Image (tube, rainbow, N blue to C red; front, side, top):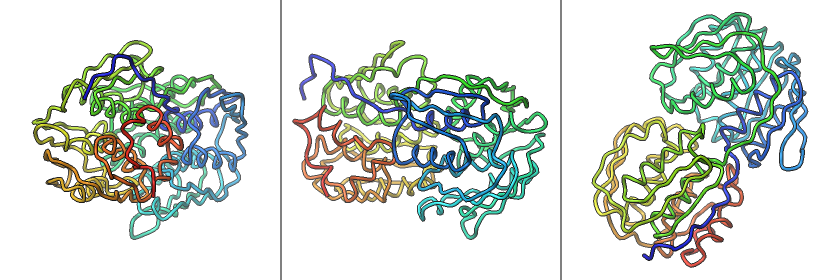
Length: 423
């Protein structure tokens, strides 16, 4: 590998996590909000469509979206189709529960397989009638809303931090202050992001010693927001720099980012890459073979563990990732999916309930089983920059978060592409 003499600039779309949170906060606010450079993908369009069904107008405004919020939750009830979007299934029911009427939430078979019981139980304790469907305890979810009371509660957040986020964002619309704790909380940086965005839209939210978070009633006010590039998506391009010996810069994703997944670059630094983070950008440079021989907890940034695991065969020693048990309940069982595909490539792995070890090796050509999971497709596309003959069985599944992913990888690394985007 030859280290590049000049940086490649990756064009990363807006953060899905920020876009969908901001859509809901703007819908709950009184007035017209403007979201600049939001992510336009299957998940965010599904979320936007659901809000439109609630009677919240969302219109294009240049490269942004204008959201006209009514300052309150919907009061007419109805059916909400969440498509594949976990954020829609976890954020919209608490919002609806602060209003009135009966709402039914449903989605694809993939989304139906993801549990919602902890959220439904929390809504029940706050005054709604929320009923999930067995045996998974997920969608379809029916919520009979008559406003939420507020009060104190503890939520099982060991499966997903999104339950807690959904409840927090509904807090300003409740009748009394909400004080909530997340038991076994995973992906904590996403809760920090949620609080920052709530404050941006005028809410009072504070976190106390011991992890209790209090939200005061009073609603939201309209705001303008520049949506940062998606740090989870950027992880693929940063990893690509590390394994190809090039330099990749992502502008707009810098020191002040609210996204915890930017922490993935520190994992790459540990693996030997050179990392520079400024106020306005992050740059990663590959300096040679990846260094392995370490064990790392990626529980707070679990959406990026696949990025590391997919390129770990190129390291000089085994790499173990732990703290990722909740990743088994995402779009796929992500630990099993990564392990299955690495073994198909001839790589030795070991796993447990919340961990995965990847041994160094020489990957062979294979067809990657994406399991309709965008992150599996994107992670193994990065390995495909170094391993000829890697193909994807479902390249279009990247449309969930980055429809232009394959084209951007091709633009930046034309000499390395090996056909991973073909059927």
